[in-house]
Length: 197
Image (cartoon, rainbow, N blue to C red; front, side, top):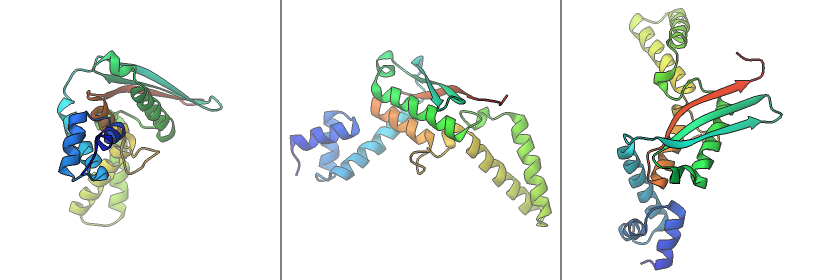
């Protein structure tokens, strides 16, 4: 089976409560990796349930990329100032700010992408699709596919995280939310680069 030390080890690894860790180890017959995965799945499910809770605390994090020609400010919110002061929350802010510096998203989510940018991408996609000589119904599907791909590419929450591309920034935020037990949201960001408007 498993020992109290196993429960403590799982707790340190996942940030979950003692009873949750004990139940997860019972369910997985003492398999530490399975128990951690179970807790992660349950934590993300709980994070989804919390997504409606008000986030009025948080922090503004900055990142300046050497030699100082690129900088990012990002506002990340949570429910309590206790969580806002934790190292995990601050690290999340740094990770996201660094990602924004590298990946240059246009908006936090797809809804925030400017309508003009979407219209421009749609026109380009239509021209390219028509040039392929395919039937109209296929052209339309090609256009929708390209526009969807564009929106995912430029919206922060849908971008693959630069440090772990199998995870999106949205996944990263959900995992952090599950770990701290509060709703976490990326509210807004601004990215400055020398010579750009």
